[in-house]
Amino acid sequence: MSYKITEEGNVATVHLDGEIDMDVTEKAKEVIMPLIEAGKEVHLNLKEVQYMDSSGISVLIESHQKAAELGNKVILKEISKSVLKVIMMAKLEQILIIE
Amino acid sequence: MTLSEHKEFPVDSSSLKEIRSFAREVLAKDPMFQNSMDDVVLALAEAAQNIVKHAYSGQPTGDKMMVKIKFENNQLTIELFDKGSPAIPQNIKPRKLDDIKAGGLGTFFIGQIMDEVIFKTSATDWVNHLVLKKNY
Image 1 (cartoon, rainbow over the protein chains, first blue to last red):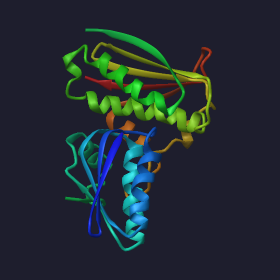
Image 2 (cartoon, rainbow over the protein chains, first blue to last red):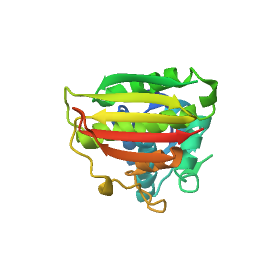
Image 3 (spheres, one colour):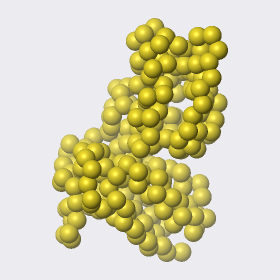
Image 4 (cartoon, chains in turn purple, yellow):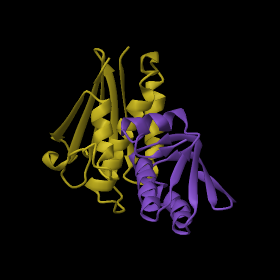
């Protein structure tokens, strides 16, 4: 997994790339959580994520919940077909914020 | 077409990518799996992840796990063998769908994708023997 962060005002966009599994979830959290804790609205761009398993979905859930706790939000953007399929299999499309 | 391939991998989260590659390579041999390949690879990877996470509690080990992929009589059978702590099938439950938490999703995915999930007590040198079946 690789990533790129761009910031504009209070919005931080994290572009994730590659495969997100148990082996990289800690790294993903280390990238995303500090942005949420800093009060940013975090946009996760998942266009280049070719594979995500339950560990990756857990990162999305935890990020969503942490942001909600802090009165903010995490928005999922440009979700790849394969990741969207897994989100829908987990029936999370109504829970997570998807644009 | 019949298939029967197996391979051993170190019990480590860094093996998951290699396990997925192995599965894709095997399943690519028959166009029948084209539509279901991503799902089947996910189910297998979730089962392998459970070995790392639960049978070995995420602790480093020099042990290996074995993955077998077999297709015959229109049935795909994936078997995983490991030497970790014995699994207690009654304790392995998918999360409830209305319970929005991170854990238990992998088991839920496996159940959604595969037609049968069987925990066996291995008669060989292995401790755990998980069998996943999907009918075509």
